[in-house]
Image (cartoon, rainbow, N blue to C red; front, side, top):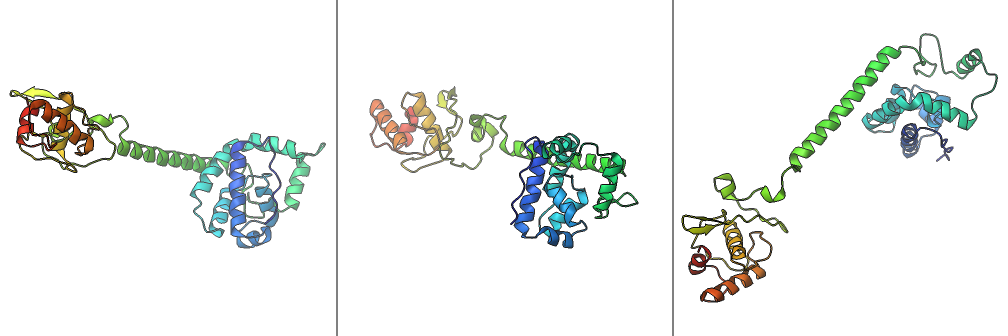
Length: 282
């Protein structure tokens, strides 16, 4: 692979990023500049100028490079549009840094040099197939504007989809609070490490956390579900910490149930059944 000439430090970062991506794509293809010229509509000297940041490649050249290298041109075209916005000032800085401007050079001389190098030809296009700056710019400007608007629209849609999926405006503790939150039964889904809220209130003379109205379901180690959440919230309400309020009846929940049963004069087995439910509801 050729050793690329270092880009001028004064070159606009947007332009540098674009040129670096072109170089990487060319290097991965394994094609020489001559081979690249043979496979595209642009000459070897043109590719040398494009890849050394001496001239901004036209849009068609970017598309042809992507095609030859077997990649999607969409990302390169977006970078091309961004680089094009910075190109007038960037080229002036880059030219000064590289010493490419010659004192005493005239516009006529520059034009003659461009024609000799095959950069321009009659009809508004260069000899290598690229457009001559200043020719057809209104139409090209409109195309650049539409491409920029389309890229922004895609980004906005992707961001909106991500926000709708994540719903960051919702508090984690208000999501999926259980059957009482929706007014109808829903499947219980255990989420490792997630603590659910407890809102214990007295309804009809008994305490309820809103997850389950049961007074009979038996629970022991490895039990899980809305009933476990209900029991965990009631244990916590009575002052017996069951650990994480996650709907999984683990060692800490069982230990809390045993302490509660001992305090209430029940059989101390850590199994939540009708007698323990009766005390928890008081």
